[in-house]
Length: 501
Image (cartoon, rainbow, N blue to C red; front, top):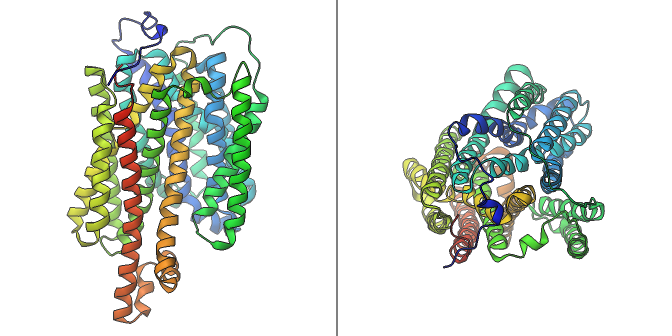
């Protein structure tokens, strides 16, 4: 397998030869914004019941999460685009400022719908924190060192995901749900001070016109797509016309977006970069990984609880150990890249491990002990932890320093799409399997989601065993879907021509 050639600026001595002390100077300045952007989503999710109890309007409570997701998805490539032009350190300050403004507005929101709007504002900052953190690593760290730093960032990412619910629960119970948003303000101020330590670098020079039409069309792709995926999770037949209509609108917008990006001299999305085989294959690996990891972690507590494999307290320990496994694998992969320069070998093997683990989990989890499930989950997490740092290093190396922001934004977009797609496909397969096999079991499953496994106690013994078997079969089909997704990611990683930095 041949490897692609590095862009000239990646080998031209643009990076400092002496990297001693770089970790203490660079990493804290990038770590905190990344932690804020990721932990924010899980912290707020924990506070949703308290918000609903305080503000009411429970039917619209999900918009608090959805609006942030939409805004951050739109913002990630936009910040990358602007950061390449005006300097990424400047755009990090802009992102932190908008993020703090959103936090203040969130804490003062008098209703759920106002809170959803202010969460959109905060998401416009949060998306920038994600993409600028990744791009700044590429700007100040030499290519061979990026693997180590991206491994550290991946560890921070999964740690934030795990710590967020615990921190959200503590703040909500101790100080009330508004404190969840207030705590972002001092943290963002510290991040601003740390970012000042980074050296200011000028952006790209030359003629430039902002791609307003590209931004509008991109927004018209993202919002209908995410709304369609959000509605598809419930697998309600009555929602199908709306879902298909949203997808059709997004497809039409995508067609015109691609035409616009090919013709404009300053495209919002780096279409010419995405045409490279190494780039689009790496982005698809990010989509497959994001889909597998997010759905696996999101639905695992539900599965273990419903199947009476483990109580909720023990499920929490499994989540923490899986997070530690992902973080460990990410850091080891980053160090492996730094030592050897080889990139795609790690996800090629890791995603095969994840695929086999999903198959094992699908067929055997219902019969395992708690310890057996914990071990199986940790093995799957180790496999999936080999991907995150690799995709960032590969894309940034192929993009070169001039387009680091656009490249980092495209990877963040790929991960977001993958996460939304994975949870939607998992839920769709789960509900469809139940509905096709036993409509009554599907209705019973909805009751279990609301009341827990005790909802089955109203059934006779034989019927209860049948329903539990059908639910187990539905979860098996859903986990086999994750095996297919991770297997596709492994094939894409193995065939990727960009295998070395």
